[in-house]
Amino acid sequence: MSTLLIIDDEPNVCYSLEKVLGSAKLAVRTAATAKEGIEAVRADPPDAVILDIRLPDMPGLEAYQVIRQIDARLPVIVITAHGTTETAIEAMKLGAFEYLLKPLDLAQLREVVTRAVHLSRISRLPAVYEENPQPLAEGDQLVGTSPPMQELYKSIGRIAPQDVTVLILGESGTGKELVARAIYQHSRRDKAPFLAINCAAIPEPLLESELFGHERGAFTGADRRRIGKFEQADNGTLFMDEVGDMAPATQAKLLRLLQEGEFERVGGNTTIRTNIRVIAATNQDLESLTATGRFRQDLFYRLNVLSINIPPLRDHIDDLPLLVRYFLGRMNRELDRHVQDVAPETLQLLRQHAWPGNVRELQSALKYALVHAAGDTLTPECLPQHLREGTLAASAAAGGACDVARMVRDLLKDKTGNIYYLVQAAVDRAVLAAVLEHVKGNQVEAAEMLGISRNTLRSKLRSLGLVVEKQVSESPEL
Image (cartoon, rainbow, N blue to C red; front, side, top):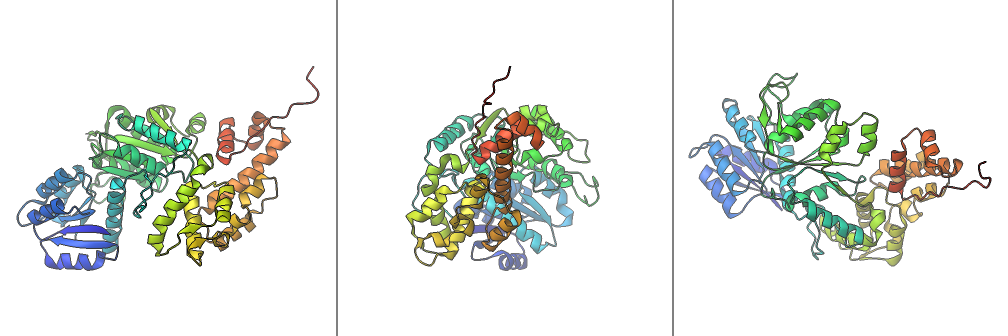
C-alpha cells in the first residue's frame, strides 16, 4: 500500500483530504506542523507529501528544503492561497512536484497525487528483476537471463555511470522506460529526482510549456507562471519518451539546452541554467526522420552520444517461461487470483506467437488468460482467440489474405490490448511479403514501390523477424 503525508495546520482541510484521497491502495497520514511533518518523513518515509506553504512553526519553503535534504526523490505537492503564489513557485524551482492553489480542485488534486505516488514508487522499485519469488506489484521490471538480455544489462552497466545523454532505441512494448529507470538507479544522480514525460502523449502546443515552463500571459490561459520539467529536475534525470514526435521548434530549444545547459520559459526572456541528465527514447527510425527533414540532424547527434538497443521479445523468446512466471506472480495479487501453473501446450502457443507488441502484448494476453482461468492452471482455452488459432499475424506472414475488419472484430471480442500494433504488424507482414516476392527480394526496388526509405524497410523487416533472400536471375546479364 502507498502512503501520502499531508502537512497542514487546518484540521478541516486534513480531514477532507483524508476522506477524499484515502483508499484501499493509499493510506493517508496527517501532520499539523512543519516539525511534526519533517519527523514523520524521517521516521517512516511516505510515497508523496502534500505541503501547505503557511505553517505555524516554520515557513513552508524552509520546511520543503529540509524534506528535500532528507530525500530529494520524494514528490512534494505544494498547496497555497493566492497570496503566497511566488513562494510556491520558488519551491517548484527547487524541485517540488507540483503546486496547487486553494480552494483545491479535488479532481485535479487526485490526479496529481496519483502521478506523484506512481513516480515515487517506480523511482525506488528496482528496474531489473532478480528472480525474487515475490515480485512486487507496483511496477514492471526488466526480466530475462538470455544472452540478448545479458548484453542489455552489460550496456546499462557501462552507460549508467557516464554522466552523458543517452538514447534508448526499441520497438513499442519492449520496456524503454524500464531501461531508463535502470540507468538512473545505477547513475551518480540516483539520489536526485527522476521525472518522465511522454512527448507523444501531450499536444504540441502544451509540450514546450511542460518541458520549459511558461511566464504569466505567455498564451491564452497562462494565468500564472509555470515551472517546467527541466527546471524541476535540476541536478536530476529527465526521461523523454517518444522524442521523435517533437515539433521543430521544441527540437531547437532542446538542442540549445543540451549544448549550453540553458533555456528560456515560453514567453520569457530570462535565461535559466539547469544541470540535468537527459535520457531519450523512441521506437522510430531517427536516421530516416533526419534524412526526410522531420528530425534535426544536429539534435540526433546530441541525443545519440551513447545508445542502447532493446531486443524485441522474439529475439529473446527463451525468456518467455521466466516472463510468464513473473507476470503471473504479479497479477495473482493484483486480480486476487491463485493460478500457479501453465500447461505445456499453453506455453507452446505463447512461444509460437510473433509478439509484435512485445512484452506489453504478452502482459495483456496473460491478464486476459488469468481472468478467464477456471482453475489453478492456465490452459490454451484461457488464451485470447488469436493466440489459440495460431495468430492472425502469422497467417498474414504466410501470404494469406489479411481481412483487417475481421481481425479487429476478433481482437475486440477477445478484449485484447495493443490492437493497433497487432493489426499493423499483420498488415505489414502481408504487404512486405507480397511486394518482396514480386520484386524477387530486391529491397531497393521494394522500398521504391512501397514509397519508404530502404532503412525504414530494413527496420520493419527486422521488427517483424522477416528474412529476405534475394532471388538470382537464371539468365545472366550480358
